[in-house]
Structures are given as structure tokens and as C-alpha cells.
Image (cartoon, rainbow, N blue to C red; front, side):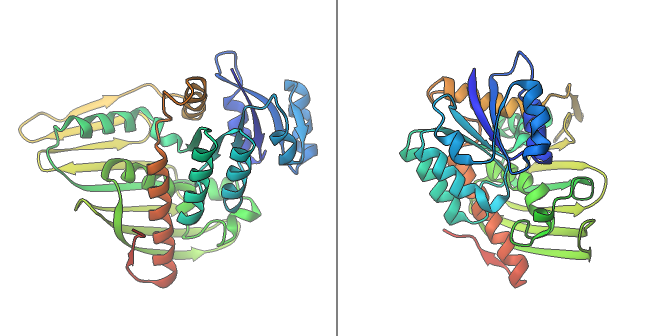
Length: 326
């Protein structure tokens, strides 16, 4: 059992706390750090959790083995570095950082201080995506040529916070909320991107936004890709990988469709899982193994995800095609 401190107790922080509940959890929530002390007080009393409003209290506490960050995006890199320097393992909600330079700094700090770094990309743990990766890795699709993705939801309307409306915290429409999951999946499948062109069509701003972001990507290995996200529309997820011998399509959390030349279409449906619990348990497992069992998302992929993320933001702002940082 790994004792952790949760930093941030907003909408997503509460989801993380709930995922740590239960006797089968590999993580024990021992402390919550939040500026909203009154809101968290009742929860902490009910679950016998220490409450604080200072990150330093968690970093100096010898009982805390790891930090779970659910804070505004711009704070992640500095908080990861401070946690690593205090000898604490770190689970950071996506995005890891808003700039590639900051992601590299955070990753290096964890490596230098010999602590595990995990990022909260829970769609990686969906059964549909596990099957998609399995099919691509098997080689049955032939040469991977193209990837398509889409992820939209209504969360920007249902779970609004003022900081999420700031361009400095949430640039390029729904990129930090939904698009980052697509970026992570594509980097996992195709590796490093080489260039990107992106556009945001905005219909309304403010607390109930309406915008659509579209992105075209070229990867260094020649794979092409495009994806989109819409705020706000009913939840929809699709990831589709195409090879010269077939394709595999993940729809939502539990459905996967495989199409191969000369074969009958195969449809797979899996039971849903608690993907937030799954990623936190994977983090705990890696800690318990001393890093011998790696977290499923490598630090190289974390860095390349933010590299592509930053290029997309630059493309939107400059309204031009952007070369991804080498």
C-alpha cells in the first residue's frame, strides 16, 4: 500500500480520491492539500485523511511516499520538480506540462532523484484501446499508414472552473481536456511527430464554450494522422489505425472493430473498468517494484506528447504549419 498526498480537490481531484477508495486499492490517500479547505474538510474527516493547504506539508511528511497532482496545468512542472527533489514519486494529471521544455525539466528531475513519474492518461487503460494496441503490435494490419481520432464531451459545460477558461491554461479549444488523450494514443502508435497544422473554429466563449479543434499531423516515420475535438457535445471517442492489410477501430471505452483484407469483420466488446483506478494502481505497482515494472506510459512518450501538444498550440496561434521541435 502506497501512502499518497492528493494536491488539488476540484472536480477531477474528487474523481481521483474516489478511485483510491476501497480495500482493493493499491494506494492509500493519506493527505489532501487544497486551498478549498472548507470543501474538503468533511471528506477528510469521514475518511481519516490529513488536510492541509500547503504542498510543503506533504513534501516534508515522511509518511507520504508519493504525490498525486490535480492542479492547474501551468503548475505541474514546478510541482513535479519540487516533489522529486523531496524524494516523492509523482502521478501528474494530464497534460504533464504546457511546454516541451517544462516537460523535459520535470522528467529529468524525476530521473535524477530516482522517483517514478506517471501521467494521468486514463484512456490508455480502456479495454478498447488495449485491444487496438494489441492488433497494431501483432502486425496483422501490415504497414501502419494512417491514424484518425476524435474525442469530444460536455465536461467543459458541466464541470467549469475559471482557470480552465484561460488561454494560458487551456489553449487551443478542447486540447487540454480531450485532445491530449488523442495525442498520447497517436504518439504511442506512431512515435515522434514531425509537423502539424491545426485550427480552432469558435462559436462561443466563456463558461459554456462552443468550439471545434481540428489537427493534421505528419510523423517522422511517414504515418499521417488527423483528429478533432468539439466543446461541448455528447461524449464520443474514436481511434482508428489503418494499415495496408487492414484496420482497427476503437469506439468508446469497450468496443473494438478489426477489418482485414479477405476476412470477415471482427467485433469485440469488453466489460467496462475503472480506468482511473487502473492507472493509479499501475503507478503503485511500479513504485512497489522499485521501477522494475515500468508505468505503462514511458517518459519518452510523455515528452513527445507535450512536444506535439506545444506545436499544435503554436499552429493554432500562428495559423500556420509548424515543425515539431527536434
